[in-house]
Image (cartoon, rainbow, N blue to C red; front, side, top):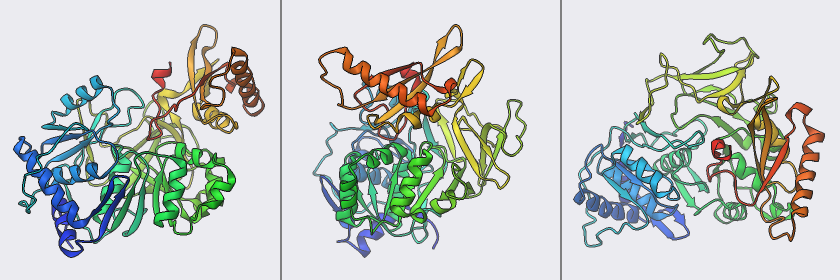
Length: 473
């Protein structure tokens, strides 16, 4: 089958399986016919407000049916959805909408005209199917406009790690590029979506059990929170329907990966290394990872990878450098309002790592996050993995703080939730700090041990598992 427009896909679903439930969420369900008609009405409203072909429409909505309907409506006009977090501060949201040159902003306060027709619309498609923002882990998010058009062959799987048909659990934010991509691509090729309003470890396990989920995407922060649940609660979950657990977005601690390989089954665990830009990707299955522990896999999908030294020349196998990638088919994205960082078709996410002799890629940390203390290179991820193994710690962020003697000294912020909130005096907090420092001292080389621990009672990473270290500095 040749590629057809996204609009045509949803029209065909409504015609062939009108009563099939495509989406289940807290605010209800959507059949194929309901999604088709509702999105037609939304599209007419957008058109009346001036949205035309190849315009960007900013979508600042929480997870739910409305998010799905709005994005489908945007595609039906031949326009491009530009998803962004509904939690962004007003100034940041306004800056991104201005940068995008959005024809329209759809947020919680938007009210469509309910009197408009839900009849079919002329077929249309955009030259770019999405324009998400980057994670913002290195500052204000950038807009990453995909170069691929809103066309698809619904008879084929989207990627080697995504089945053609599945019950897909959406527990991450739909404004995040990976969640957005796999949810909508899956929806157009045979998936049924079960959409949670936000990530909650209890609800994830319950949804897998109740809806017989077969495919889900998690980031390591989510995986860590599920593992921290009491063993009896995890044991109550029925995971027999689960065929694939895909994780990406950040390095996964080896002990966490082994836990999931044992619990879910190594052959069901898939890891992908990629970025919002889709300039290249690797993949590795759990059973393959056990033979190459720590690796994020080998290149797939027409990708090639190189690790380069400071002078730009390729490193020998096993030597650490900056990871560069390229992919067949030409550029996969265009930045809006930011310079193009590609060099001769090669791109970098700013990660440090190495390739082994068999072509397996290992990621150590972000180049900009590297801590140099007393002349020694220290990767924050290594410290964070140790701290997050402490029973009180939900998540941790390690960073380098300027120091006249060492250049940088290591400090860490740890989220302990409500464990000591409301303590009557500072002594309780000091005991927690001392316990965590002692824990790190027993498990880390001296040069890698934090000099200070700061306590937090709220999540340190966003819903996509990303952290902006500069905000802590």
